[in-house]
Image 1 (cartoon, rainbow, N blue to C red):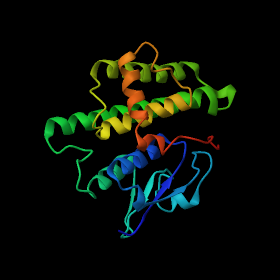
Image 2 (cartoon, helix red, strand yellow):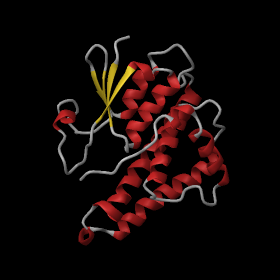
Image 3 (spheres, one colour):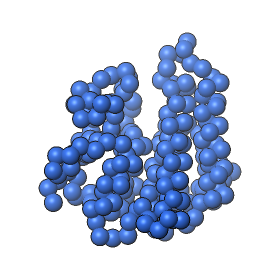
Image 4 (cartoon, rainbow, N blue to C red):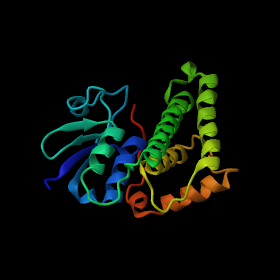
Length: 208
């Protein structure tokens, strides 16, 4: 297989999800990973040339097809191997995995919005009530996970999305999700010990 190119950002939960999925599928050697800094306040022409939203991750397939959005890229990668799929085919487990992926995306979106109000926006323009409302979404989602999580032995796409979203929440110190949630804390620690997570650590600062 000709190497695909993944436009990546080392501190993006969405980009990390794609790379963790690639490792879990054994496809990491098929990817050339290229870091790109992106921000709503700083236009990256190379990324905009491929994704009109100016965001990573972006995957350039071996035939030149360009895909963007982590959900789309992960589904594409899941079709390139012969092993156990990350997105199950049977309806009940499939929609459970996709539901958890959606929850993870909401956690990441809310965490990023909270960080805008606590750090990234100019101090005089910050909205504390918006920050608190977004953190409350993260907290409520984590309460749900404490009740609903399964084991971490055979992660599906929802597990990968959740652990990478929560790793970003931890990395940016948005919310202490493990406090008072022993089941979630154990699940998170088990997944963070997987080779796919150890090989894709978050690093770097946002450049606005």
